[in-house]
Structure formats: C-alpha cells, structure tokens
Length: 139
Image 1 (cartoon, rainbow, N blue to C red):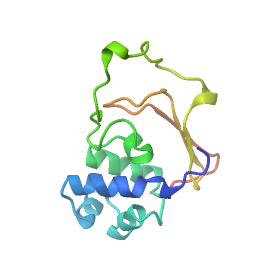
Image 2: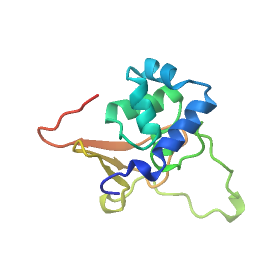
Image 3: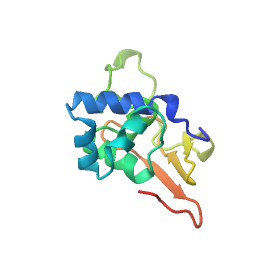
Image 4: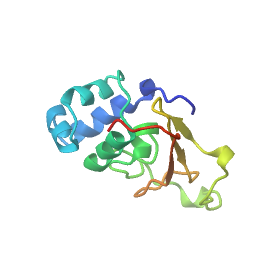
C-alpha cells in the first residue's frame, strides 16, 4: 500500500471509535496532546496524522492500529467481529511473512509502516516502522 490515502476509512473509523467511547473531539485532542482541529481534519480525511499522533490515538481509544488503518483486526475494541468456524478452519496461520508479502503504508513524511504478521492479532500490532534518513517526525 504505497502512498497511504486517508480517504480509505481511517477518518470514519476514528470517528466511530471515538463516538463509541463517548468522547468529544476536544476531549480526545486534550488526552492525546494535539488540537481539536487536527482530530477533526483526520476524521474528515483532510489530514493524515503523524506516526506519533496515530499511535497515541489508538492507545488512548483502546483500539488497534490495524483497525484504524485497515478496518481489520476486529472491531473498534479489538474483538473479532465473528468467531471462525473451527471445523472448517484452515491450518493455523503463519506467524511471520516475507517482506514482499507485507502490507505497507508509506506516509508523506517519509515514514514507512510494515506489518510483520500475515493476520492482525487481537491485542498486539506487530509492525516495523522505518524512518527515512534525515527525516523528521512532526508529532
């Protein structure tokens, strides 16, 4: 996924999780340490959060990064949407995947996120975050 597009659902999912926690835009911004305007812009797909802000949002909301970014990994609470049918289940999934098969997000700031596992984990996100040389974060 080169060139992450904020219109892919990050904003609506962020709004959904925030609303389910009964938090206002201002309260979430206060807890995360950013402006209410930034939260509003992210929810509307006008702005892409920095790595630090995105991580802080997921942590504060008790949501997985995978859910906020891709809509996978369960619902807003990290709980799987439905339990799989164990009788019809395929062999257990692999725990590691090759670099060429990873889901990737390249942010405009030069930061790259790569998922290290083939499936989302309910309580943990296994990601490699790569900063470009000389790049800087705007958190």
